Structures are given as structure tokens and as C-alpha cells.
Image (tube, rainbow, N blue to C red; front, side, top):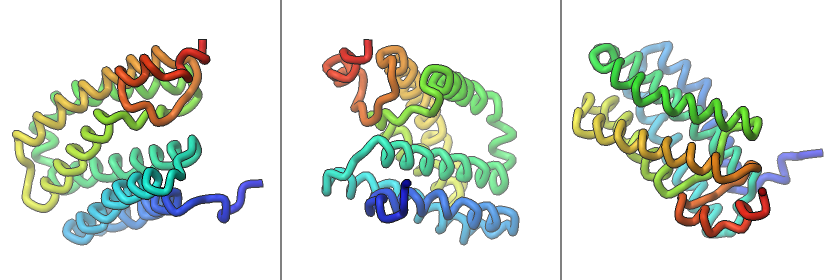
Length: 195
């Protein structure tokens, strides 16, 4: 039986992001943009903290990696909803480009669920950079208004990262976590034992 004492400190930061989601949604519903944005910033910050702690104390695990990914996806989704609520005109003007960028991500998720029964948790360097740029764009937009340079950069980087994820899915027959990128996947013994 799994108990809460089996979770480490990095896991608890991931739990925070998941637990904060309903409160963020309430702030959205109440149209409290400034408070929502500061709370979203805290949620994004916990993502950096849990990754740092997991590496520093060598407490990484497949369960923690998956928990981190769930927290990331929830926080990112709420950030997008925040943009939709508070920057609706910007979203409306750019919805075609957003759909073009978001469709490969959905395809990647469907491929992962079909192959592994769950989302990937590769945590590549490119995925970390893309997540940082996405968080920065969302927070910048909510604090100051959308910036088109950041928007285009985020879209391009997100597409490249999604392509990398699809390639990695094709390389690993079984679900694995913490693959730094395609170069490292080619040398990963887990890939060789998956065949």
C-alpha cells in the first residue's frame, strides 16, 4: 500500500502544483488576474525547485517523474486558460497559429497513450527549455500583455520539442523517464533492452 510517507520532498512540490489547480481556477472564475498571475508564478517556480531537489539529492524515480509531468501539464493548461480569460483578443487574433502549434502536441499525446497507456516523461533538455519559454510567455503576457517575439519563439520551440518527443516515442518500446534528448537516447541501454 502506498502511503504519503513514501513520497520525497521533490514529490511534494509536484503535489503542490496539482493541489493549487482548483484555487487557480477559482481565481480565474473571480477574474482576479493579478492574484492569479502571482499564484501561477509560484506554481511554475515549484517546478524548478522540485527538479533541482530531485537532482541534488538523487531522489529521481519513475513515479516522481510522472508526478512532475502531471503537475506540469495541469499548470500549463491552467496558464493557457488564464490567457484565454484575460487575453482573449490576443488568442482570438492568433487562434489559427495556436491550433497549428497545438495539434502536433495532441498527436504526440495520443501516440504516447496508445503505445504506453500514459503520457511521456522524457524530461529532455529541449522540453525543459520549451516549458520555461512557455511559462515565461504566459506570465509575461498576464503581467504586461502579450509579446509577439516571445509568442513566435515559443511556438517554434514547442513544435521542435514535440517532434523530438514523437521521435523518442518511436525509439522506446516501453515507457521510460528522464531521457535528455535524441543523442542520449541513442546511447541509452534502456532502449536497447526494450526491443
